[in-house]
Amino acid sequence: MAAMLQPQIILLKEGTDTSQGKAQVVSNINACTAVADAVRTTLGPRGMDKLIHDDKGNTTISNDGATIMKLLDIVHPAAKILVDIAKSQDSEVGDGTTTVVLLAGEFLKEAKPFIEDGVHPQNLIRSYRTASSLAINKIKELAVSIEGKSLEEKKSLLAKCAATTLSSKLIGGEKEFFASMVVDAVLAIGNDDRLNLIGIKKVPGGNMRDSFLVNGVAFKKTFSYAGFEQQPKKFVNPKILLLNIELELKSEKENAEIRLSDPLQYQSIVDAEWNIIYDKLDKCVKSGAKIVLSRLAIGDLATQYFADRDIFCAGRVTEEDLQRVAAATGGTVQTSVNNIIDEILGSCEVFEERQVGNERFNIFNGCPSGQTATIVLRGGADQFIDEAERSLHDAIMIVRRALKNSTIVPGGGAIDMELSRYLRQHARTIAGKSQLFINSYAKALEVIPRQLCDNAGFDSTDVLNKLRQKHASGEGANYGVDINTGGIADSFANFVWEPAVVKINAINAATEASCLILSVDETVKNPKSESAQGEAAASAMGRGRGGPAFRGRGGRGMRRR
Image (cartoon, rainbow, N blue to C red; front, top):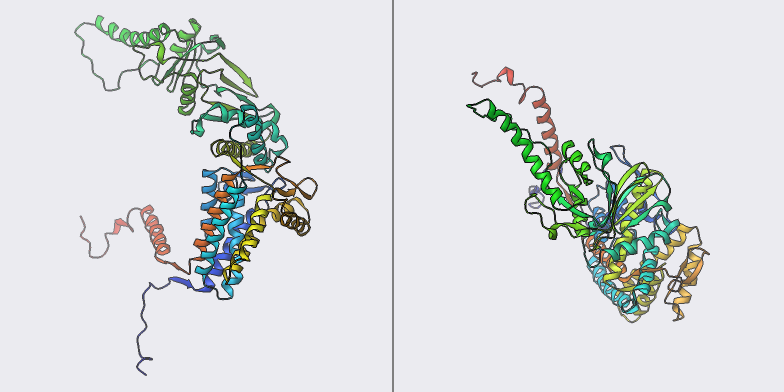
């Protein structure tokens, strides 16, 4: 009786949404599976593209997992974890963003029946972590190093890695053309890690084959004043002066006050303005530079002055382009024209201004330090060029990774099938429930070759059976899906390669994400945030009508002033 009369203890605010227990874990798994299904069809060379239309009216066509995940406005708190792992894979490795989301979704899908049967999530998590470390060690064992090869061999190996990445993109039809371009661009910047040293400029018009690589810097012609037409547009071995100052007539301040005792002195003040600008221009000319670039404006007077002396100038050059010119030509950006010495001037073999589509480009070729490269992309629609830029970014990242961590593994689902076989075999040696869990992890890895087949329109059951048989025979470790024939083929012999770091990172991130989602058993949704938003909106409306809730009436109990 006493127990019945006990008052109910209210811990959380009224309206708080709490869900916990087995149902909550299953609900989170379902949400993540739904997200994985959204990007599932973009995997591989025959993957489809997604068209995403946002509330601002911008349209994006993309095949890149990370881009799609960013643009999908996901509100489910557990499913947001998948967006984060796609972003981390993109920033760390550049490629494999769809793979990582698919793997995480599949690991959770395999765990779902165990959770429903009452298995404790911690048992699953422990087994998944064990399986993950076994898989990563096996990848390291199977990886082939490309160290110690000559430059030509290395180039062709890197081009094959880039081609594998590009094959699943919109520009896959021209993958050889772009792969060699990407490899040249990455080798041009050497050991420097800064990605912004590879510039990508987009010019609508023409076709993809009209794209070209500049071993140096290229940027669009900046805004120019009269007199620009008279400047020479081509130089051989010029000296380049880089500035961060305005070369314009400076008018005095609005409130400047000058007291004169003699009217003749007025002219000397006007002349002083002109003398200052002429002095600056004179110093630029005396430095021996034939090209003057500035981040700030170069006015009409300076433009004409330089034109008369056969010097090319460009003002309002963007910060990024100016830094790349400095890195390529060996120059240093100056904030003053005093004491310009030869050491701070840059140089290049050829400078020219040339027409690309309907734009004019300033192009610096044959730069001495060669620490930069520029890819000028051409194509029909703007969306197409944007997607081509994203694809090239992935390929550039992959080539950089392959250069740094010079081990590669076979692609096309071959490595996934081999890991799956290895883990199934290992599971048989374990007594207890974890045998089942590691088996389910192994089954989940088969999602990659299965999805590659489904996206290409092949019978995935048939292809996977062939692959299982081949890998079980002991000599088919490199066999993966053959996208062209719908059968199986040696991925290594067909040059379908990817850096080992892509796979290691993907398995690591996917396992971490699935373990994190499995370990959540309660979600508490606080209603305060929603009411706070409502109050903020109401107070904003009140303000709009003439101050805090109708200030004019001086409400009850308020003293009138």
